[in-house]
Image (tube, rainbow, N blue to C red; front, side, top):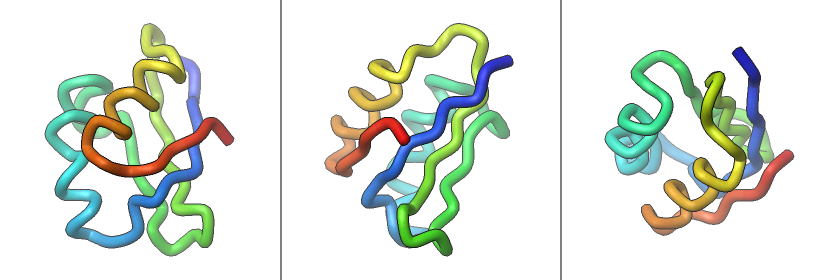
Length: 69
């Protein structure tokens, strides 16, 4: 399984709730997390099949800024 890391503007629990459905569908429950305590608000996704572009597109679709770390 590969680990993808991104910096985001997902900065609170309400923001996490907003992206939860799309990330659960994309990566699966328990295969992603957002470190909202980090200044960079790091999103970590573990997957064998996802590309960084897929994750970026999904998070941007929910209205957040994201870039590969």
